Amino acid sequence: MPQPARRLEVFTESVIRQMTRLANQHGALNLAQGFPDFDPPAELIDALAIAIRGPHHQYAITWGAPRFRQALAKKHHHFSGQEIDPEQHLVVTCGSTEAMMVAIMTACDPGDRVIIFSPFYENYGADAILSGAIPVHVPLHAPDFHFDPDQLRSAFASGAKAIVVCNPSNPCGKVFTREELEFIGSLATEFDAFVIMDEVYEHIVYAPHGHTYFATLPGMWERTLTCGSLSKTYSITGWRLGHVIAPAHLISRARKVHDFLTVGAAAPLQEAAVTALEFPDSYYSDLQKAYDSKRDLFMGYMRGTGLPFTEPQGAYYTLLDISSLGFPTDTQAAEWLIREVGVTGVPGSSFFREPEHRYIRFHFAKKEETLRAAGDMLVKGLVNR
Ligand code: GLN
Image (cartoon, rainbow, N blue to C red; front, side):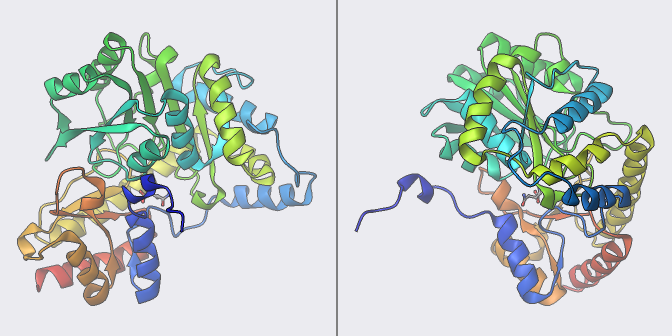
């Protein structure tokens, strides 16, 4: 019998998605895969009901429906200050999952090296391998998850073609400072590498931290591919609407990758989502306030466990340090949490290159009642163990 492709043997199925299946199987609360259990804004659901009755049932233009691209360009300009030409500077993808794949395939040939910080969102490793690129990992050092400038420089010096940066960062909650981003930019310039930004959590950043759009740093637009999505900002992870923003010479290539991978994102959903992209500023400040209080609430429960944990500066994840509980691995700890405590997290090792089994990742993009229920169960289960 022919053997299937060997490259599929070097990474596992997504542990995040696997934990969702386990949560469903055991009826445990799911704080593993980062998605809300509350509804998206009512205006958006109304817009979808209208769009679905309209004439949007065939392919949209492969790189995005014109109204959607125009609205996205305007919204991006409003927040980043950057002029985006909807005809040249963006491609609409099926979620930022596809956006990241498109960005890496646009930047890298098979055999090229791509720098990925560790811990990292697990898709990046698989994206690199599927596109034939070789991941080069640079550690972010706990507890503040800083990088060592010399380690980063050596990774660039090893001949990297691109670096992937998730800012705000999943899973560690780091928000890169402007100085850190400028340093990354200076190395990318010195070693002539692309910067692939995952900025999907751009609107979830806790004061006093603030989001810097990497491509707006001096000289960075030309070498940056910025990936983003509507999933987290408008609580529509199932709509699968993402995008890559980059200069025209990169987008013309990115469109080809996207076209042959998926042809396009769902036409009626793009049409409806224009409503979200036109929301006033108050929508974004309300979203931030909602996440501020979710974070405060859930951090209170984390303190209640008596275990060390990370307080995110952005995004909606925390890493709980379960090393003192005596489990041989984080996976066994996660299984115990599902079975005995009734709460699902993700074993932290799936985000690290290093053999790191200290953490369980939980997310708090959930209703207050879900967070209270899960928090109570975690405190009770962990304090009594
Ligand atoms: N970004 C979310 C997480 O890290 C969801 C990932 C996914 O399954 N697409 O959990």
